[in-house]
Image (cartoon, rainbow, N blue to C red; front, top):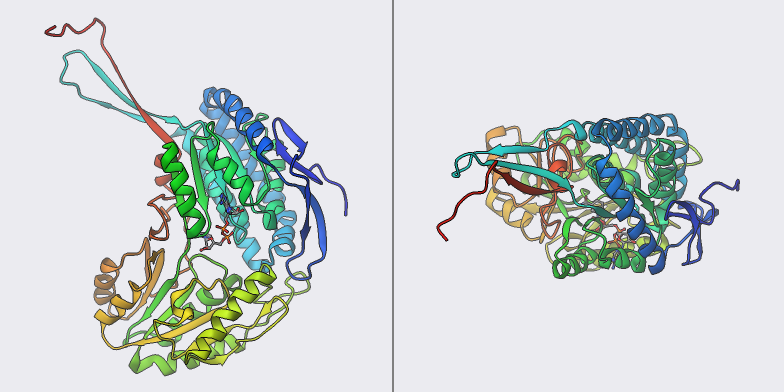
Length: 484
Ligand code: NAD
């Protein structure tokens, strides 16, 4: 292991620093081998980071907009230059297959590039006034310190989709990556922005677990929490922030339905199904976790999906091209296997898969899945495609809504009018017709409904709303005279 700036360290106060929470080993997802050691931030580190960020952020907000934009552009260019390093870490630390790591990097470059344009946007409006001679200026101002808490599955993209717009709009950021992805999603990012010329203190990166995240959420100097992760943790964070009157963006779990109507292009549907069920081992919030298929085509659909699953190679992505890499940790393997096995016990049948070697889980297709089974009810986060049959469009809609989640859905039908009418009735933040559920286009606002989120939206025009607050300043040349 070659020592780097971040070996044993966190990025707090004004740069690389020893952590008060000790250190932790970073292990390769596929092999469990130790890759490096990093610092773990504790409460006192969170306090130092938040206070430093508040001070540095005030100066950053006053920095001319074109200088802020230039730092963001430099960061995007440097990220592109360092693609090989980021991708290698993403593969080894997070178990990503190479194309997934490459796509994530590309998407993150786009996110930062898009954020670089934000400082040039109009940041306010002038409104008419009922008072003669009065000017009503309504303007966006930074929130101050934004706390970003990110998960391990797309650590670079899901951190940066908040970090980049928040910084560009004049906020300081304290980023808390998961310790399972802290190099890819945190410490390499700290180095990137340092080298791009971001002033010291404006970005703090604090690897740590639940305790570190909790300290960040509760810190009074942090004005907003942008959290991506599980619904259970999102609820806790929402409660705390609610009491403290902090702004929150909560992007949470999903159990997304792919609806296949009788008139679907079945080959196309099966291709979409395989991609959205098995990409990144199914560890994606938008994974198609429930395949709702019309009775008349269910058997053919299951057969086509089984064929596609059988053609996938599972293995260590650092050793050669594979379609499916390891699950992130042993706990996740046990959880996925338990969902599969308990559903089989309850009457589901595995057409393929339902087995694993270590963390390598075979792509699995389950048929005869009913809504009372764990494979239908739970977010699986593994390469598993459970198929449930319906008879009418109404029944399909009702099945989609059997989940409290409302992140993404897909509908397959060659009758676009019928599919659009169904899409309009779904309580889901994102619905894709004749496509699959795992879709993210950076320029389109992204977000879930129900238990999948609180209406926080990332991307495109939503970023301006998310990472600013507004202020009304009215002015008049001479004081107004009131009746008393
Ligand atoms: P998680 O909720 O366990 O952890 C997410 C982050 O929160 C991690 O950094 C973790 O350290 C931190 N954390 C944990 N407990 C905390 C606490 N009490 N206070 C503050 N921070 C805390 O989720 P995960 O297992 O890392 O990620 C998988 C989940 O994330 C899935 O449910 C998935 O659907 C969801 N997810 C959602 C989206 C989306 O955009 N909607 C994207 C990716 C993942």
